[in-house]
Length: 544
Image 1 (cartoon, rainbow, N blue to C red):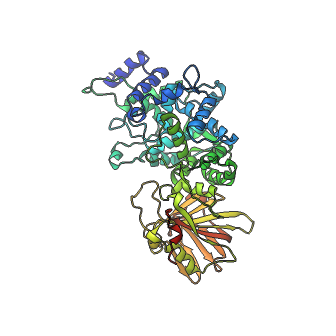
Image 2 (cartoon, helix red, strand yellow):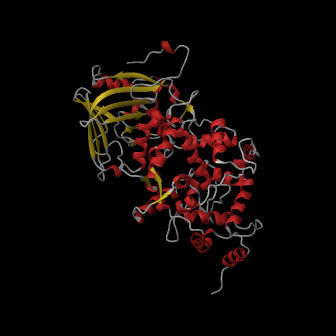
Image 3 (tube, rainbow, N blue to C red):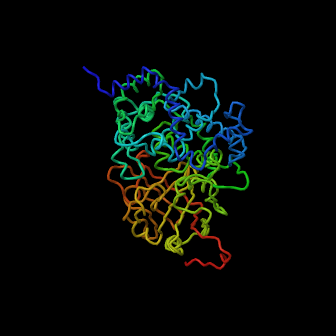
């Protein structure tokens, strides 16, 4: 059978060794030189950084020099935990700089550590920073769109330094890939989206396909290029030749992730003094439990990482983007990176700095944290009536967003922290308000959230009642889904989480967590809202 012109063309390129590893990486470098987001108004900045006194005589960055840069040019602390986090980020960039030829964890352990050259660093920044891939990796009708899920996945891969053989359901893997395949910013891009997991290979294989298509020899504009799918046979051979790992065999050690999360929480807000990272231990454990799909586990797998970062804490890794922007591009983060802003000027008994940092991982797009003030603090000896509690939630000037946060203990003595976020407290009680811009990450609806002993968010369903008072009880939600009911004069609260099909109620449950109920004896309740600082702040009165 006669070969097609695309097959003949690819064979000719292979004969010229144009698909050797080093040639492909060189072609990526050439495309990056022309790519605006990393070069426009920053021409030579990365190279100048590497030629600074922190770089080696070869013009590349060692691990020690890299960490020093993050400390001197950005905000990485100097604590042992922060140094370990700096090493983790450095290893991640080494990994990303080799895409689409990532190493297996076993190979990484066997090969001596290398340093970050200018080319390798620039490639890694392209893969990890927001909105920096599209111009280099060609997207369109002959290829596929890169998505938000792709960047999350590459972050996971870069942190995954162990292999495992935990079984998984291939059908579930396909469903997860399908969810991420259409996660693009603009609706008009949906026509160019396609699955990056199929019978030919997994997501790592499809990364290789994207790069092969994008780095093919350029022809005259009026000549057709080789279609992405035509590279499939070659890509399958290259996966074997380069011993590329399988996505579902990779895992992140929980102890390594725990240390990184502590530092990420410490960097959620700007600070004039170095923050004690150790105060974030409990908060980091709550987050690690979330990424383990709420199970006791030693490693984090891709599905758990995907769900944790996409659905529960989309801003967790924003401090890393800020560190890299400030250190290597010498400018503030790009639009959409929400980290390094001022935190609350004061904290409460429940809303401490660690808990505020947890909230920022999913509410940074909804709250101006520096304006948060505690307006009510209740203890068992000073509890309001149910009507007074709801009045405290609903009556703020300018319809400011409100946080109702409670801490309590179970019969076994375990401390739990739950709360409610309402962006429109005057309206959400009767009927939860629809997001201003549907499907935009950051614009959260009225939601019930949990901060300890795990972190989770249960989003409100538009047009369903947010809360009600009935027979001296206050209930957030209704039958089904997630409900939070205050009883016994607000001394106790019962949280019910239903996972049955069709049991939506007012707040969506997390199906992975099954059905459960927890009853708490309330220790404290706080009501927070925003108030901008003014010279006349002492004269401001809140309607009650």
